[in-house]
Length: 270
Image 1 (tube, rainbow, N blue to C red):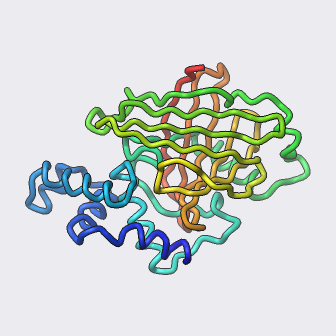
Image 2 (image 1 turned 45 degrees about the vertical axis):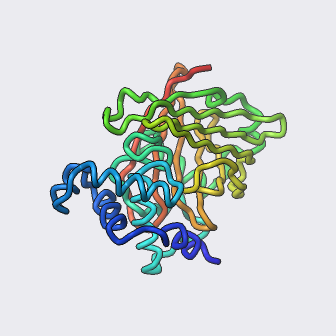
């Protein structure tokens, strides 16, 4: 089964109305504007979104909307070259990311740093630090971080989002993510990977992703490419501030056109 077929299977249980609501959401509409456009109540639209999340196992409505929009692109044979997920981004989200829809989670730095990190990953030069060299240095990314939920609109604000990084003596990174939604439901994901760009399996309950590949262009920067069913989903860059107390995350969606970069903010909790 190809990545596109795998993704299509995830959406097979959705009704036409649920798909219509999700596509409007992906195009930038709010629940209120969708209700007005479809002549429905906001409660009815929220019920459609809740049913769609339950059927697919994706915890964020906006994330699910983006994945459905991505599937539409894949069905039109817009393919991403295997080695260029970070250089040729595509699917253009409006506000949110894999771990948050506007309130789930996804983060990072500004365009110049993100672009530099992507180029460093894609085209290493003689001056680019080796994986072994960077892995041997202490990284300020190590530790636990909490999403600054106060920056997220109240109606989409999760109860809690945390991400933790650990580095083993062999240089492999263990990443733990937990999301507690506004209704108290939770999702988690865990992976252990070397910073060599080779995808490894993600365990946990986040149905929208199943693999991760890591690169580390600098000690305070980690580039993470997430995939589902062999298809790149997104690349995100994590960067720590000089005082090591805050971290940003930027997301770039897989595909062939220049996307908007999104930023969310985390504070160190240990």
